[in-house]
Image 1 (cartoon, rainbow, N blue to C red):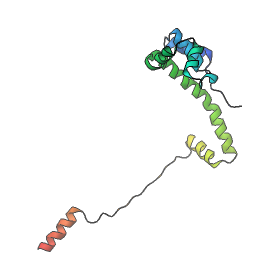
Image 2 (image 1 turned 180 degrees about the horizontal axis):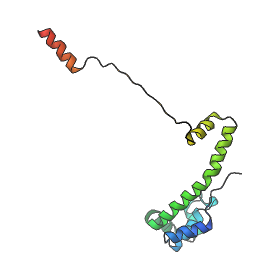
Image 3 (image 1 turned 30 degrees about the vertical axis):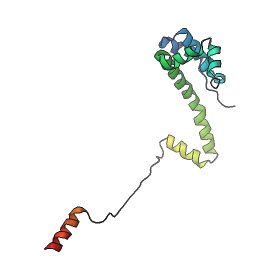
Image 4 (image 1 turned 90 degrees about the horizontal axis):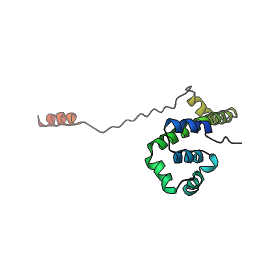
Length: 139
């Protein structure tokens, strides 16, 4: 079963207190951090949070405290999902998937993706050479 990225309610309490988020912002964060609500239309999310659609947009567009709390919660949720993602990648690598093996080795710092490009171009004589050649012709 795939790992569902969720915010722990205690964390929502801590983050909203840290940023002094409004009651409406708190209720909206409770909704938007639930996996089953993330793909819902804005109107439905606002309804579940008990706020109006204009309040929803005000929180996301103008309320810096709400935006900071939202960003911190999203980063924490993504970080919590990184463990299962790394494990899934390691599982693929152990099955012989060469792309997964390369990604694991790069992530571990064992190898680095480098590309050396060598470009040579003959553009003919430069201005100094042309000047000297012309001088010889005139002498």
